[in-house]
Each structure stands twice: as structure tokens, then as C-alpha cells.
Length: 449
Image (tube, rainbow, N blue to C red; front, side):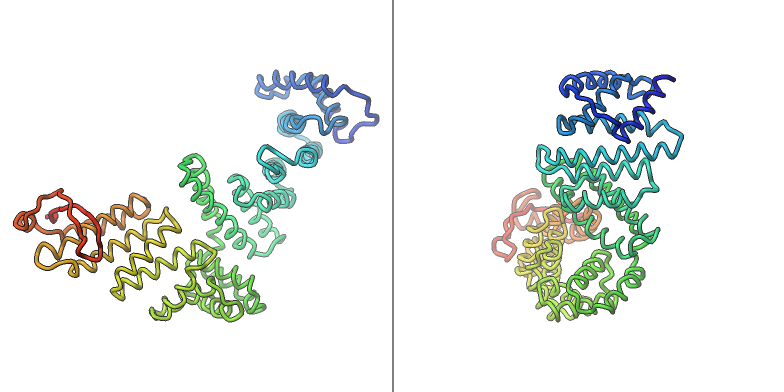
């Protein structure tokens, strides 16, 4: 009981900074309290096992040697969290402890802004925001400010946990009338760009842990945004903004990106935004929106004109999709070689997407009769087509179902065992399509029954 009273008194002194700051030996006090911290850690930070001298020595360092060691602030968070905040039932007192916790994060950012990899202020603010959400959910505005600073500062390097927490507190701000409803979708779009960047980077680096974390974050964001993200809601939120500022390039771009991401590109608002954006600021991005407009109307000639321009989009997702659309148009135009070139360019921009190989396989299958005649040679291109479908699902597991359907369908068009034999070939033998535009080497296979 005496220890507890001492700790409570010490906490009040910490909050008030004390009356007189005595001279201290920073090194001695630091070594002393750090030894007690290690012992306390062994008790799993049991508040009843705090040594009073630990508090005294830590407080001396905190007040008199603020730039001595970063551990002062890291340990201070543990002391305030495990020693006081978690155990007190007095809400007024708890709020004062939380004030001290917030001060610890702010002081750490002030005295130790740099970490091993550059600025760590964003990381510090993110942790402050998460602790505010955890210990003082009523102080959500402070949490929002801290987490927003973290995301703004760190961008693509943002911690996945901060992204999750920030989006949650954005929704809380909207529900409490502190932000406009459009902020939810604005921030969703921004955060998903960060998440997608990290998913792509961790996939390429074969970093499974990071990939799993960001995939989980992506699922969390998608689940959280659903009540606000159907096309009807998007139009309701953004139509008045468009009506008020129909020539605002920044606004038009933002609306277009959100409608595109949520697949609301068949709405009248999307078309109006696309047209206005191209009028006031012609660009690859606005060309993409116009190209999609013509594509939806099945005006493939006009769509091709604009989509060729949009392949130069800085937004690589849009450039990638432009090549996908162009490849599909070439398939309809029977311009198979050009279609393959566009599909290859799409894959070069996103090597996690198997759709380009699906398209190439379809191009091969569509041109099978151009690669030979008779019951054997007119069917050899289907081998190459199936090879592409196999490649699609190996690159992109999400395309496995679609690829398997196509594999099953086109395998039936393979030559029969008899046709293979009578043309002097064997199953499993390599076969070159060099005399055909495909120019691929594949393997001889017989049709499935």
C-alpha cells in the first residue's frame, strides 16, 4: 500500500514537473533505474512489483536529462501504461496519466526525431495515436491528428497498424461530425494506394510476413468502407461537389479515381467527370476516363484512340489497365500480334496480374486456323494457348478458376491421338510454331475425352 501511494504521488509530481529540480548524475540515475526496469520486466510489469527507486531515478532523468537516452521515453511509456493507466479506476486520475503518456511521445519526437533509417517522428506519432485510441477513445480527435501526421510523414513506409487505426478514427470523426463524409472515401483511396504499393513490394521481395500484414489491412479497409462505398452513396456524396466545382482539376481527378476504384464507371457522374476533366486538363489520365467511356459504349475505334494516350499515365494501375483493354480490342479486331504486344506491356507494368497471359492464350486460340490446316495442324495453336493459361494461374492464383475453365475448354480442341500418330508426332514431344505468327515452342498433347 505504501508503494502504491508513493507511486501515485510520484505520478502527480511527474505531471507537475515538481517544485525544485535538484542536480542529478544522469549516468548514475540512468543505470540505476534501467536495472530496476529489467527486474520489473521479469515480473511481466506487475504494478505491485515496482521499486520506488526506479520511479525516482527515472523521473530525475526525465526532468533533468531529457536528451540523455531515448530509452527514457520508451521506458516511460511502459511505466505509465503498466504502472498506472491499466490499473487505476479513477477516471480523472487516469486522464492525467494519459496526459503524461502523450507528453512522453511528444518529448521523444522533440529530442530524438531521427532513427537508424531517418526520421522516426511519423512512427512516434503513430504509436501515440494508437495508445490514445486504446486508453482514451473519447480523445479520438487527438488520435486522428497523431495518426494523420504519421501517415502524411511516412507515406508508403507507413506501418500497416497505423493505416488500420487511422482509417478507423477517420470514420469515428465523420460519425461525430468532425469531418465531411467524403473524407472516408478520400482517405480510403489514399490508404489503399499505400497498401497496394506494399503488397506489390513485399510480393516481389518474397516477404511473406509483410505481405500477410498488408493483405489483412487491405481486407480491413475494404470491410470498413463498405457502408460508405456503394455507387449510389458515392454519387450522393460527390455529385454536389462536382456541381459546385465542375472545372476543379484536383476534385475531378479525385472523384474519377474513387469511382474507378469502386467500379462505378457506368454512372452518369463518372462520364460527366471524365468529359470535364479532359476538357479542362487533357492528360493521359483524362484520356483513360474518356477511353473507358467509349469502351462502355462499344465504340472501340474511339476507345482505342484515347487508351493509347492513357498508356502514358503516371498511375501505373491505369496504364496497365489501358494495355489490357487495348489487347482485348485487338483480339476483337483480329490484330493478334499487336494484341500480344499490348498484353506483354501490361504484364511489364504489373507482374502480379495473370490477365495478360489469359488474353495472350485467347489470342492464340482465336488464330488457331491461321497456323495450319487439316485435323492436326489447325489445332496446334491450342497447345500454346493452354500454356499461357497455365502461366496465368502460376503468376496470379486469383486467376486460377478462370484459367482452369479455359484450359478444360480448349484441351478438347487438341488433336486426337490418331491425328498425332499419323502426322509423325508423339505426345510430350516439343513442337515449334515458328511458321505461325505465334512463334512459340510447346508440347504435343492429345485431346481429353
